[in-house]
Length: 335
Image 1: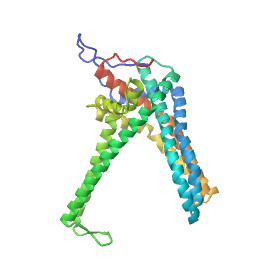
Image 2: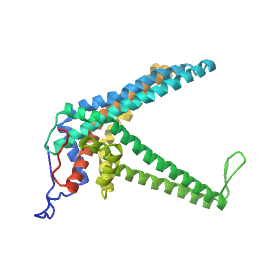
Image 3: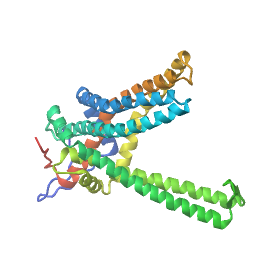
Image 4: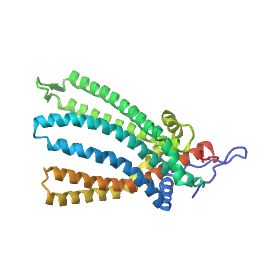
């Protein structure tokens, strides 16, 4: 499966430029890829999901143990000490499993991209390639989390300090000795509240824009040669330049497409919880364990079905941006 857009004022001495795919075209192309390769992509998504389920199941046993000791202080203290050791081991296990999850997800993206180029690859060969780069996938995810999280935390601290100074200096809000806030000037307090909401809106807008600018790190690692964790972030930043809000539009439409599935999941989850509550007391350990397992099965089942669609979206966006920026001479590496 391959496609291209019609030329736009081509020059005889330069590669034929590609018109940007519209938001609707990106989503529909991803859906066609998903539908045409559903069985293949779903099989890989199933493997990816298993890598995430395993550490969660491993955490369930000590969690139930600690819960059962909650009423015994001495046993609870001993249990918490054991639990801290188990959690440390679990975190290491989760990181290891997450690297494989990211590698399998990226394999779907590379397979989708190869379909767009008209150069289909062998799924097993692609999985070997992406699994050999799994720590680069994990590293890019970790670095991106540090970047966005760090900027968000610093910005929040500065913002709340500024809000506190404004509110305190204006006398709109003061605090009692116990720390309870008292509003002396409702008008100024309302203005401070408005500033808080404005700050929250600005942060959400910035977060959305950043998500679009760093939408493609895993694709660059999966498809291109010698692209490490840090380089993938830079590569995504460069590819998405002047296209961030168009990518946001793609994400919004793609989310709306999957929204009915999310709503259905919520309905099924609520029904399942009510059925479980009929047989087990709501405050019993059995109810907590069974509802956890049921919700996990439902959520991971839906995620397994949706994951290939989102990976296909990334492949189409990457194909579109590379086609227009670097021409049609796009070849897959490590064939």
